[in-house]
Length: 76
Image (cartoon, rainbow, N blue to C red):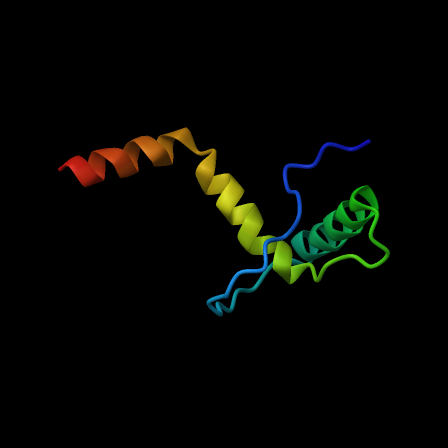
């Protein structure tokens, strides 16, 4: 079984942000959504746009340099 960094997509009240993505990134999001649905046993993949926020959250949460800089900023 494939071990993805994302699990279920939380249903949270969104803030709308418009962003342009390269076509290759969009294709990767579509593929990721399909694999995510398959590993979760779902028939239809989630909307690829719904993957962006959890991916950004995961990226920010695991960026140690960002965490250190943020912590230093709060202290100062």
